[in-house]
Length: 129
Image (tube, rainbow, N blue to C red; front, side):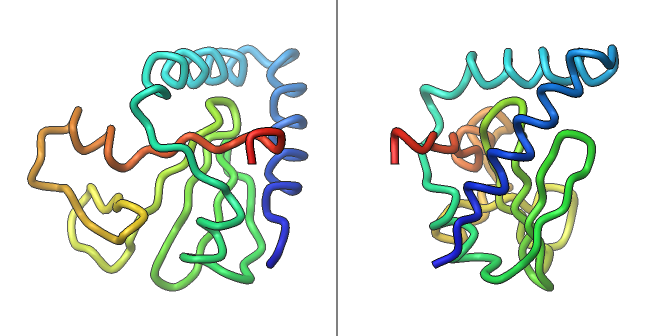
């Protein structure tokens, strides 16, 4: 099993440091942290290594504006390094909202607030794993 959490944590530290001297990144960071603090109690907690190994094993992640992304032909795991959460996208699904649960279920028919609660996952810190 690969240690994806290590790379994620390193990237998160770098991004947080960069946000201290960059206004636009600082704003993005504050919004992500606020969103996480507001909603994280309703999000399921997950081990990042387990999620990546299930949906995108063996991939090399890349950084995209504060997001650390693990992607293969079918799935894309988008982590918010400022907010400490992730979402799983099934690229094979049609439409704009292709986020799924850990079981691969799509809740597109639900209202947005319910759908987001079911498809956002709080990333456990090392000491919580």
